Amino acid sequence: MLRELVSNEIFTILLVISLLLIASARIAYPKRFNDFAFILVNYKYSNAYIKNQKFISGFESILFANLVVQLTVLFVIFYNVKESINLTTLEIYYTIGFGITLFLLIKTLVQRLISSVLNIDFIVSDYLFLKINFKNFVGLLLIPINFILIFSLDPHLNHLYIIGSILFFVHIIGLSYFFKTHLFAIKNNLFYFILYLCTLEISPYVVLYKLITTT
Image (tube, rainbow, N blue to C red; front, side, top):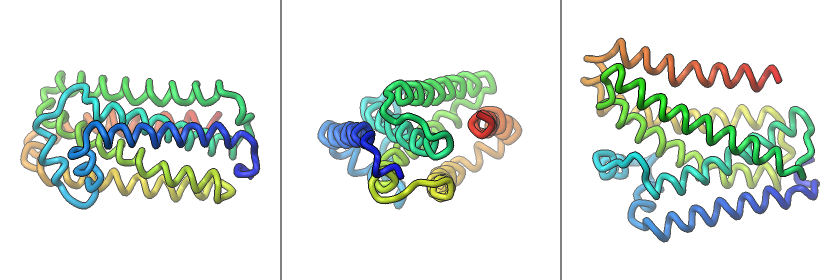
């Protein structure tokens, strides 16, 4: 059982790092963080910040770092369930964390490039803003989820499916807001937007799923 392993010390350190990151975001950007905390239940955050978005935001960067840490913890937990790995080896954490970071950053950069080529960057920029911030919110949710997995439960694959369903639901909320506010523009560019979604949103995760399940 995961909670009986001495290697929980590494998970504890990573959870503390995440808490420090969240605290720094809260201290450095108090108003924005307070608005962000309610992103699921109202549109105040999106309405206030979507038009002033920056390519690199300090607030989003801090939350993205937390997201990477928590996704790394989650991946290691369930990779251990599948393969029974040595959780005291730091290399596995570095490898998974680096892979997650590289995947998310390259995917975002390619999305921006393709949206410019297809001439739908005026839609995709808002889409990416919402998607990035809802992903960062997922990073917040993963802190208590991972804590429970490490210290209270004996993780198995059914837990992963439940967590995946919760995180998918959060993304659906974000997408529903995007489609509601950009419905007219999407209709006028429907073919290119569907092509964009299939190429850069669906296919990468299908490939990633195949790689994970076949290794």
